[in-house]
Image (cartoon, rainbow, N blue to C red; front, side, top):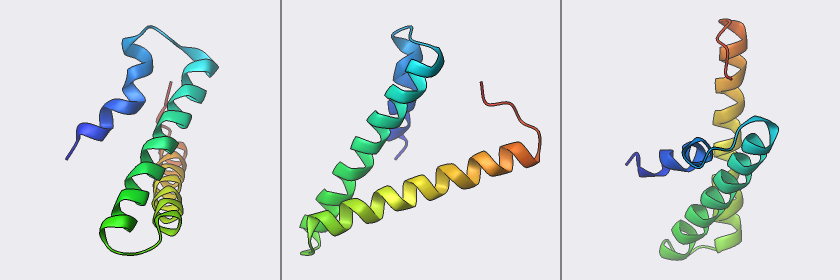
Length: 78
């Protein structure tokens, strides 16, 4: 579902901008990714830490690829 997409947008909804907003978004998304991965790990019978770190790695990789593609195609982020 797309419900998790609201997390990075929260910073604009409360009126925060600039570097502070980016740091807050990164921290909140990191917490959400770690939590989701830990829950999946628990539900699948695996270790929650491994699931949390795997989910964080997937999220960071996806963000990095998206950023690089934005730079390559000349799309401004802010």
